[in-house]
Length: 109
Image (cartoon, rainbow, N blue to C red; front, side, top):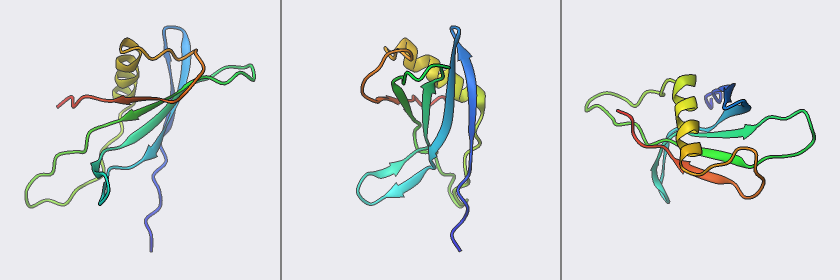
């Protein structure tokens, strides 16, 4: 039986802008792309019908410890907020429109 997909979502307020985030993909291995880490989607929330640019946060693949199976990473909202702040400092504007903005999160360990 296929394991159930983990659900993770939340909101964070950065510089007065409410940003909603959710887990898009777990860490996995792909024969085409190799090892891929967790991926999150973040977008500014508004009461109006206007849509905003989406931010894709790509985390690095977790390091495996020899002799131990790969466990699912824990999701901390503080880590997601820090990654969103990194992307904003790197040029992402959450209230703009346009193409998806992909941000490769640096390994914090």
